[in-house]
Amino acid sequence: MRKLYEKKEIMFAVLWIVAYCVILGTIRGNFGDESIYMLIALLVFATGIIAFVKANHLEEKYGLAGWPKDMIRYLFFIPMWILATGNIWDGFALSYHGAALVIATLSMILVGFVEEMIFRGFLFRAMLSKDQATVAVIVSALTFGLGHIVNLFTGQANFETVMQIIFAISWGFILTMVYYKSGSIIPCIIAHSMIDALSLFGADHEMADWIYIGVTIVIAIGYCTYLGKIKNEQM
Image 1 (cartoon, rainbow, N blue to C red):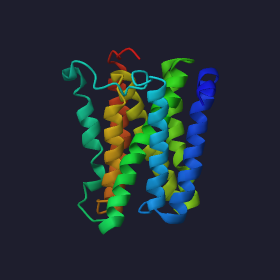
Image 2: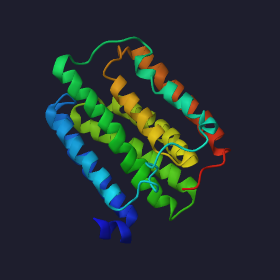
Image 3: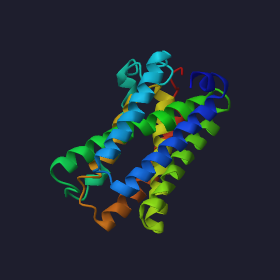
């Protein structure tokens, strides 16, 4: 794994993404988010990522070394975290109960970590060292959104999947830009985990879902335009 990372860093990132999409997509389709198999698979991915990063002392490179310095400059994290609560804007309704709810919640939190590390950490960072930042941002965001196409194979409706992809691409731009400008992936992991975990507690009204998607798209455009004008931390 280390040799592949050193010689072909982009391919290294792509292999992580493909493995994640295929394995987790299959498990999710067959057993669901509340399955212990889902949680175990995510723990394996998360452990593998952490082990690789620590073994090669890459915490700083991937923005895991800590919060950005001079936090007052990074108040732009707040709008992202507020937007991440959108799944409960229409009220609360539990998707699962008891142990199933606990397992599903833990799984969604881990999804936030794993997906941020492979899409924002591995892929975006690999491309940033090869191409211009704009290209890296676009590819990372689009790849993240298109990665949700695997939901077609889990029984989800085509139209619902398309809207989820558009929603994910919008978030992909927000998360990538925040990571790029702050140099820390931790705020992005928090936001991503909030989105996924809170989806288990939202009332899931169709009209509210449409509003959330629309608001996310509009805010993504304005937010990323604003972030583009901010001087980024050295990465």
